Length: 81
Image (cartoon, rainbow, N blue to C red; front, side, top):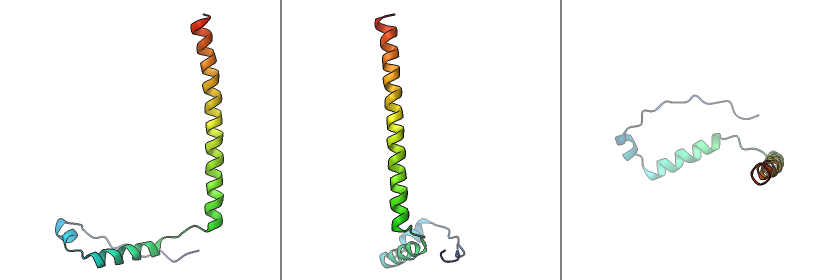
């Protein structure tokens, strides 16, 4: 699928090491990390977006129904009870 995972090199981060990082080195490290990322395909992004939207609509609909049921139940208890 992608590249083989690289060995992670543990670095101790201190105030001195953070102060000594040059902006160009920082940007190079960011680019290097972004190259390691396995980005999803366009089709996968679209498929997962549709799934999230459908689940959100279903949950919203279910919560709306429950809200309506509980509202009517409480109206019966408060005003006719």
